[in-house]
Image (cartoon, rainbow, N blue to C red; front, side, top):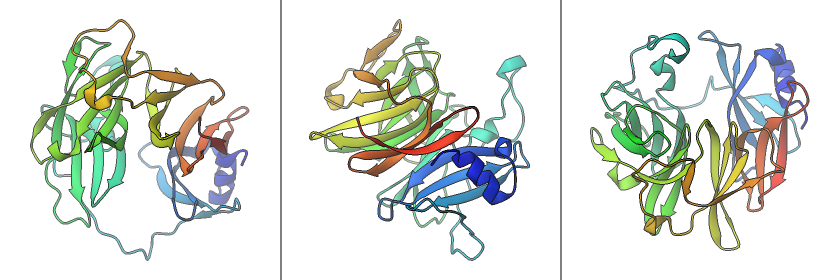
Length: 291
């Protein structure tokens, strides 16, 4: 589907420049795609959920009469700008940077108001009371230091050996393993850095898939193309604990034909659905054979 952002703009009665694509997921049963978009920009932007049916029909999903439960983060950062110059940011906007459903829990990555601001949460579903998150520390090989304030950008649940784990990608670009059993309220844990994938780079989205009996990670990012990352022997990998010049750890290959990908999700056993840049400011929705 060419110009998916333009078609969504037409559906919502606005221009393509006023549409921000925040995330995409595929329902594994119906194969319908759901796009989380913002109509407008800045704090006044209106969030909209758009469904793309298998035949290409678009519709805005109304949540007016949908049953729901609500969980509020008790330790989210205070709303306000911090830092100076081009390093200014509002940590409140990164309270949630990625989210996934795993077994009977919602896994959430983001920032908190704790001293170790980088946080993971495993919240039982349906929601009852949401406790404080788990503070996480990692060793960032490209920077040559331990870090506690950089948020996870994207993650996937993955069984490493027989242990349910979370594989997380950070900006500039460490790949880190966290055992899910260690995510308990108020705890402080240290992740295992299993790869450095090159600095000056921001992860965008990640999926896990199987091919020829092996698990692979597929990572979209801003400046190094789509990375197909091997999961071989992650459970035996040595943690990176010293500064590295550029890349180290789990091996990967760059999929040259997958250009301009901003969002991706698994469509079926052999294909991914992606949102990627087309001509000009156009964004296209495409199914692509998994590499």
